[in-house]
Amino acid sequence: MTTQPGDKSEAARRTGPALAPAHGTGTGTGAGLDPFAALPATDAAAHERLHARLAESAEREGLLDVAYRTLETPVGPLLLAATERGLVRVAYGVQDHDAVLADLADRVSPRVLLAPARLAQAVRQIEEYFEGRRTRFELALDLRLAKGFRREVITHLPDIGYGRTESYAQVAAAAGSPRAVRAVGTACATNPLPVVVPCHRVVRSDGSAGGYAGGAEAKRTLLNLEAAA
Amino acid sequence: MIRLRGVSVSLRPFEEIVTEYGPVVLRVCRAVVGPADAEDAWSETFLAAMKAYPRLPDDARVEAWLVTIAHRKAIDVARAGARRPIAVPEVPEPAASSGGSQQQPAPEWERDGELWDALKALPQRQRAAVAYHYLAGLPYKEIAAVTGGSTDAARRAAADGIKSLRRRLAHHTEERGEEP
Image 1 (cartoon, each protein chain N blue to C red):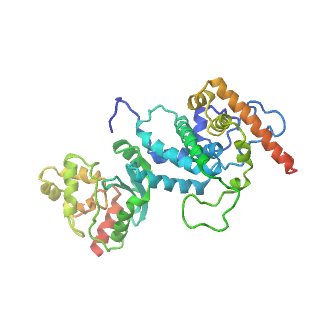
Image 2 (cartoon, rainbow over the protein chains, first blue to last red):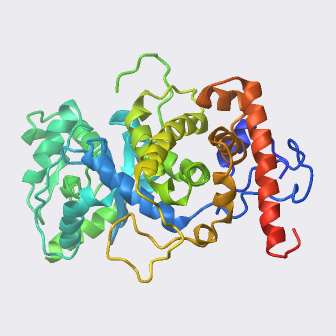
Image 3 (cartoon, chains in turn cyan, orange):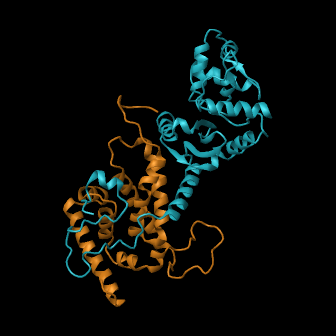
């Protein structure tokens, strides 16, 4: 490698030995050797141990603004994120987890860390839900990502019981704005907590499923799961 | 999030910082404070970095920022280490100890100990300059900002340090009767 140590773009990516061969005062025996060859460039076991320790200390020190993890489910990998107040975001794989994390860093706090411990209760309840053993979620929710009318809609959605559906028009009426059918559609499409806040139970007036943030197939899977239970 | 400037570029999730820079900061910590204290220094560094992260300017060089924090933490950790009775890293744990993040089986390079023996023999200033330049890739100007002193002094410390380190390691190799 001939990269100069001060090269900005390279320095960020480099993981290997950073020795420029012709650098400095290499004279005498062993001048060509990388003295740091014995130091591993990456040490996965140590990194994992240190990461877990960081998550634990950050939680203890009140620095863990957003904790997240992913969970494999019948509707694909779900990203789960929680603030100290509660579950703040659930996202489908098709929503691009990296983009969702960047959005959380921007809108909530950049102190975002992979820290599964805070999500333990949410994981347990979501697993029970997909096993057909849970019909309602009992989790602290942080609704800060839903504003105004969208938030009113989101707040009403858990009133639609497990296995039931409502039309966009019915939800609009229940939210006190019967003409805001389109706005209800937007509120559902931008629901920050899909699955847990059941926007999948809102369907078209003709009974067809309608759109869904996680894709039409995910919506059908959830509706079928609830119909079968 | 309060933006002081209208066109602020938002910060990446801190997780990305840990993933991208965690390994190089660990190498730097291992080289500067040695195997026994490296993980404490790393942990203190990233906890302090996470605390300060939301105030990091958009155009800050993350490596230099982390090395600056690591430098302070390394000094703290080394001082704390100096107050401990006697560290005996040569004695391997016979069996896996029950829990406790402090007692991990030493990786191969630690048991060897040769590199740390050679690094330990350098003056602290040279050891820091060598690690920040050759491991973290900082230019001498940034090293001077971290350690204090002039850019020239940082360049000299790194040059003297790497020369001395190579000599010591070559000496070890010869002692073992191997070709360098």
